[in-house]
Amino acid sequence: MQWWQYPPETDRLTELRHQRMLLRTLADDVALAARRLHSAGAPAEWRSEAQRAYLERRWELAALLAGAERSIEETLTAVLVRIEAEKAQLAAVARANPGGWSE
View 1 (spheres, one colour):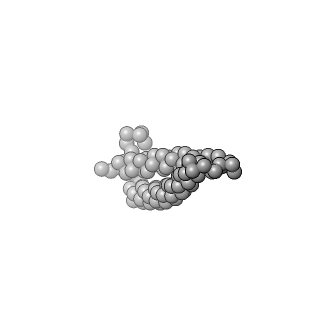
View 2 (view 1 turned 60 degrees about the vertical axis):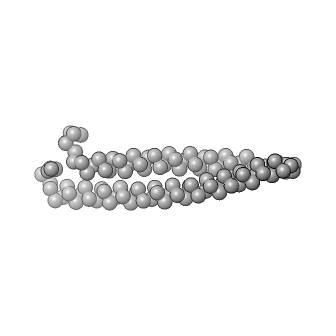
View 3 (view 1 turned 45 degrees about the vertical axis):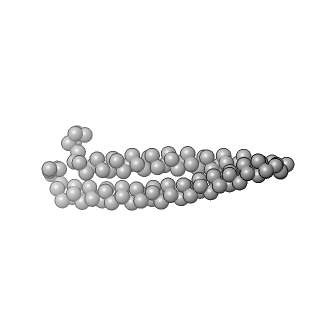
């Protein structure tokens, strides 16, 4: 079957797979930012108000990144479930119509 003969249902699967790829890339970027934020550490000699405020803000950012990581993982899980459902639906259509796709 040529690519232009694929049924419209495969477009949904392609879109979901694209979303999966984008979410995985985003998850990697957020995880990298979180690791960099944690690995920078804070020198023990930091004592000024500005330095303490800077550290507080870094911890706030770390918490925000952790929340973003959880949200991305939840969304990725939902997309993976939708991909499996879409594949099952396409397989059911193929079994019901072994001669080819109809419009």
